[in-house]
Amino acid sequence: MSIEWDGKGFPPVGTEIKTWDDESSTYRKGVVVYSGRKGATVDVGFLLSSGEQGDFSLITAEDRLEEVAINAMLEQADLATKTAERLYSRIKRGEIPGIRLTDDAGS
Figure 1 (cartoon, rainbow, N blue to C red):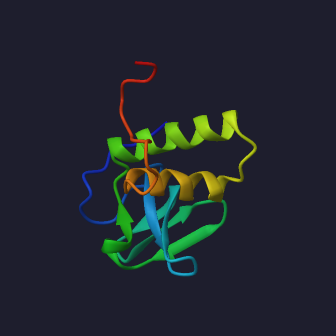
Figure 2 (cartoon, rainbow, N blue to C red):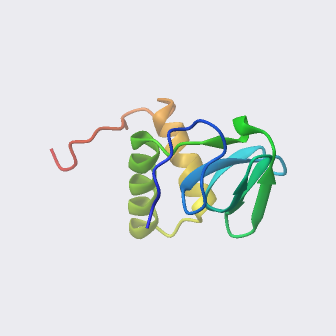
């Protein structure tokens, strides 16, 4: 079950979002397990908490396409997740000649 959030204020419990992880300097996807007037806590495999509204972000359609592409790479090759994520980022930035991102798989 995913709860809708408009991106304003702190996200409600049960919402799937991205949250900033200071330790790795990246956004991580997770589910909000606590939300109050002064902050929220997100389960990303471990708990991340913040009192800064800017540390929470909506998951976009582009994020969903990235997730599908990375999972497809993991199914097709013996890659570590971080390797697949880095490969996807390089493709997205146009750094790998002859490979581009499209939604028209197989054509």
